[in-house]
Image 1 (tube, rainbow, N blue to C red):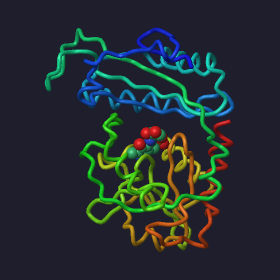
Image 2 (image 1 turned 135 degrees about the vertical axis):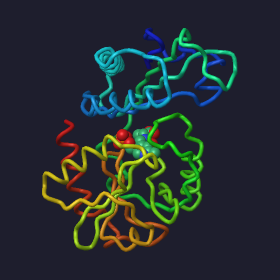
Image 3 (image 1 turned 180 degrees about the vertical axis):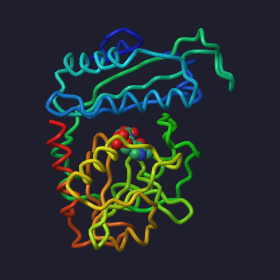
Length: 279
Ligand code: PDD
């Protein structure tokens, strides 16, 4: 693979970052993941806008502008002949002696991008639907900033695996926040689409926004509010959204089957609409 590090395109085994990088030492880095379908990037303006919001929230130094970022993304897709998968971008505050205080503005940030091939449209999970378990949400309080501090979501994912499930939905104060790496939706028995409102409690998903727009276009009633795991277990359908899973149906929660235990019709329709619009 060809990867990108601070202005250079390199073979992946030639690419290095300092052990003093703050992303490595302090988790002081933000990231984005853009899906690639048929060699085309999905929703880059949304991802770039969120990257700027994450950078602003953490007072990170400036990096490439959006046109330059788009060029690097496209160049990596081209050089790696990527048809389907993702482009990962990580921006850290750069290299400095270990200190809790941020280094001065003269310290350049570290920008790294790479591609990963992956079945997005024909993923097995999309066909059979995901089994999820609930786990307490023990992450920090600024989940709207897309940082690389991903240890707790990894633990939640491993708890799901250990329970024979695919993923975890996180619960705080008796309410679902989101999935370990996705936004969570339910469809009530009378057909309303429910997903938690935006706040610092969840990541403001780019796929979430696109799916809400598509749902509105086809006339679904939308409620942006929190829901309990109990309400989710009683729902007609559930699904989760993220750049690389698009829309993935949830077929059981904590071992309780939803609807008829198969991917629901609303999830399937929104998935199709989103894929069609992204091609
Ligand atoms: N994860 N919530 C969390 C906690 C996430 O990590 C993600 C994305 C989402 C969905 O956001 P979007 O629709 O913008 O991808 C919601 C990415 C894909 C990841 O970490 O791989």
